[in-house]
Length: 299
Image (spheres, rainbow, N blue to C red):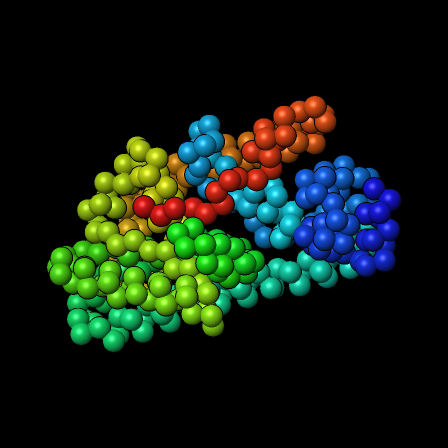
């Protein structure tokens, strides 16, 4: 503990990741020490939002995980450094928002370029709506290098989750659009200048209507993603239909109930982690501290 206080006294407010690197401490030990100390102040940047996880009872958990939140979104300082903590918090908030905006712009520019160079440009714009979701819509994107699941290639932080909802799009044009986007997905992943992961799915409005019944797990995830998603490109008419369907099926209310459960789960998880003894099963603790799969699938 004296090491933590000494480093913060000399260096000023740090992110959780910076503090863990400076001290060489295990991330869990650093988080627990900072949270329990009466000399240390922590300030969380950004917001917590719902993710659905099959491994969690009731599916509801909050993102970022406790570990990710501490490393990337928490400013740590001493009680006498409140002005400096506030300044560092604003700085990190701006950095995260800038990353989110850059990723949204990249997604929009990429989709616009692909569609406008397509020979069936008008049909795609009229019959397909491109929606972006994921942590970028919460201004919570990060740029930490991480391996892409299928190839192991390192990518630059948060992926670009794009849902393409169509209405009356011919099968051949669906296949053509899928092929064009898939090729660009590969280019973005392998190009050293980008190293971005584009995750996408194409489905028609009838499939969306079925998913909004909110019964199976995948349907719940799909509904949540469209509830939080933002218009990116294409048909405004389809986008407006989706928003109206979300209201009709009361998806936001259902999501709100799950988020309340997730917030209760987070409080219980933090309480368990802070009160755990050295004899507590380590794997059980770590399941509360972070998730084995931070990436949310889209359906």
